[in-house]
Amino acid sequence: MKKIVIVEDETAIRENYMDVLKKHGYDVRGYENRPDAQAAFEQQLPDLAIIDIGLQDEIDGGFTLCQSLRAMSPTVPIIFLTARDSDFDTVCGLRMGADDYLTKDISLPHLMARIAALFRRSELMATPTVQDTLLERGPLTIDKNKMQVFWQQQLIELTVTEFWMVYALAKRPGHVKSRHDLMDEARVVVDDSTITSHIKRIRKKFMLFDNDFDCINTVYGMGYRWGA
Image (cartoon, rainbow, N blue to C red; front, top):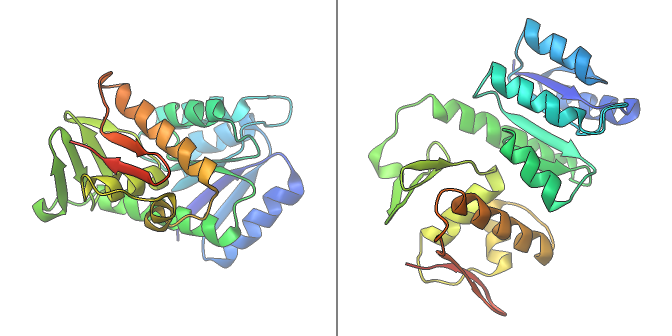
């Protein structure tokens, strides 16, 4: 049974998520503040952690907890589940080592799907790479099996949603993908502005390794395409 820890300071919200997770067969523990959660992590690492950013009197307590957990384990999946939806907070959370960043307006079925996807990625990471699961486009390499993306042999840390968007674009270079197409590929239902924000964050992540990265082209009024 997979062990999930949820760190959320609002009791009703925490217990609601815990009930749903338990009904899906997970072993769940909940904590309302960073010190208690960190002490629990030091005793036993979970298989996955769901963390809010603001924890009681610590405005950014979740960020600190994420950093501590990532230092303990480079592989345990971490999801931020928060009301804070700014690009700044999202980028900060992902740079601190989170695997996904979700807002609390996400539906419960969508949340469960994202959790399942992260568990699947964790399991696949432990399996050998099979050559026919690799997609190569110049300096880009995508390992579909392990859900990893490399640029110039450097691992790009992407969320599950971002991974599927990059894969959708790169598998057919030059073909325009509408925002609706990208939603279908990433298995999400969001508005157009959210897709635009995802694309901006993806570009920034590639540009951390290559300032000249320009392979994701905007086709105004239509969508996006992967350019050579």
